[in-house]
Image (tube, rainbow, N blue to C red; front, side, top):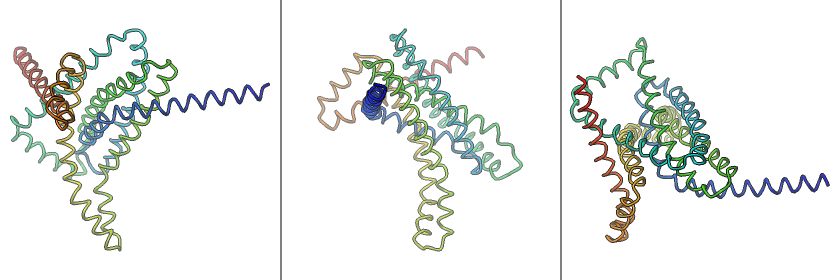
Length: 300
């Protein structure tokens, strides 16, 4: 009897794990776009520190991201159970914040180009001088990356929760935990690899093999362009993700955009909603920057 009960229990666990695996795959597909944005944004956020401190900074952001997930997973379950109507407003606040940060970066770059150039020169000098204390820069980088990670993680958790909303609370918890762990480990593992590409290139150029030397030289040549590309993609991702959250929060607007772009052909049906999300993200960011800047001026 005990053996039969054990086999039944193992069978139930096997079925549960299989269901969790299936639901996790579905949720992962739906969050793939946000995961790409998360990677680009965080790779951008942790650049600009001493090479020897890159991995410690990534590790610090990884720990902050893990704490974000520990907060968000039970919070999402609690809100879903007790206050399901609150999920959309909270997500829209996060989306608005991303749009604001993205547009504020553009404004600062356009209006304070000379200041930015001077800042970059000081940063290069500081990075080249081992006696300089870069702890303040690292703390700012880490705080900014963790703050951004919190918003994107909230979006990932919300999308995942929506995917399994019809399942039992046990299934919801299991899928959310699997997604949270996979996202955190996967994203920051890739970020760590990206920021250490230059070290890999140097290592390959010092090997005896001519192929390794050419490969290393190619990596060294491509690494700066990859970082610049990630910086641009990271800023664009703020508008795409933030605008997408805002659009999804306004059902009539979401439906109208899909219907309008579907009538323009298959290509626009595929890319039109994404472009619309980005455009709305830019507009929302511009409005928020104008309002907040005006308020700050009024305060003196």
